[in-house]
Length: 227
Image 1 (cartoon, helix red, strand yellow):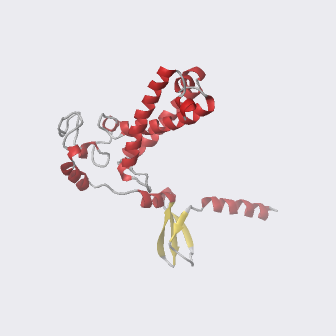
Image 2: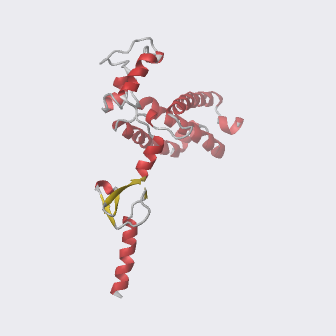
Image 3: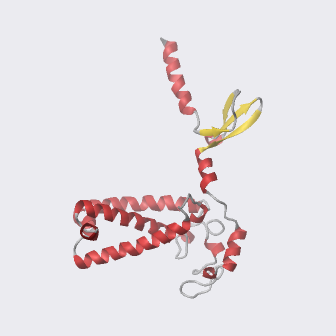
């Protein structure tokens, strides 16, 4: 009885301890060891074979390294990097605008003040993502409830609670890679590129603001009445 209970607890514990990884070894694995952070290492006849975890696999397929040389080259050749929207020329150490090499998380200051600066990596990224989620949520919620965005947020109150809970979640998920020296340009998967996200985010911000202004004038939900 004791041996049965010991076997029943040992097997699931071994399964739980097994890493989710893909290994290049085929057979003859004699020993399983663990490095720091739970990274697996199989030993076959004394030769270590490194296995890749989920994070390493995702990084290999979606992440690209952005070097300082590439940033400096783009800074010299890209016309939009030579002059800001307001006509000012980027100067090193200035408040705004800063050269690309100084404002990028890969090569510049990674403090919150720098990331959340007017030309930092965080403001447009976070606002664009919130706007894309907002316009998508507005379309579904208005079709289901028949209420405007303003009514959903302030009359019922539940929409405002969800929004307040969503903002820090999206902000946190966006800030962590930047603090680790990774901008949105370093990640892409198929058609989901940083360029596409920026344009979709900008259109969503304009669309969401237009939706609020339109519903304020017509006092009716746009998606429920016209779509």
